[in-house]
Picture 1 (spheres, rainbow, N blue to C red):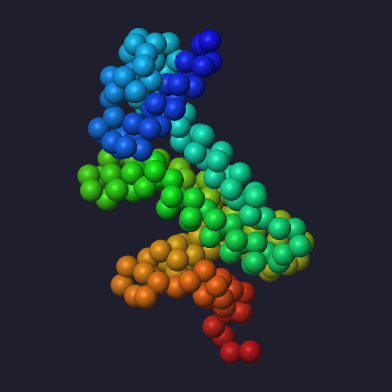
Picture 2: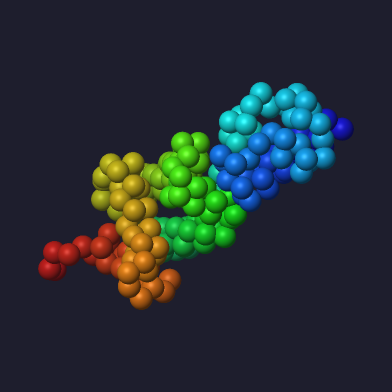
Length: 191
């Protein structure tokens, strides 16, 4: 029974954080949504931060599953990179909590919301870093700093897929893949 209550609380908190953001979510709201007494929440979580961290942990697990599902062992490193980044960007744009955290950081700069977004980015970079290291080990790409390379790959992808469209005609999925391959695989130097 207590496991069910804990899950009800986590689900209610996720809903509240997604609807109202981190700052505006209260333990009273979570208790009301979960249909439990506020004291029941404190039997599982000592504070709002701990509850938020539990939800972020679930979000990151879900993101990793999305990334793993995108990998195809028959594709090249760059094709897989594009597939994974595209699916993760879609996931982030469709996931209510990630959207709300982005809005909250932009609008009021809440520290915990900012930390949540940083945790998402760090997790994605960590995942890409592992894939970069595997590609180095297989000889698919040149030796490089996997962490720095993962950071650059994510930022370039985000710039092409999301930031570009703020001031230009959006690039479709194939064009983003083509540009990512051009800049990262082929480079700018003439052949």
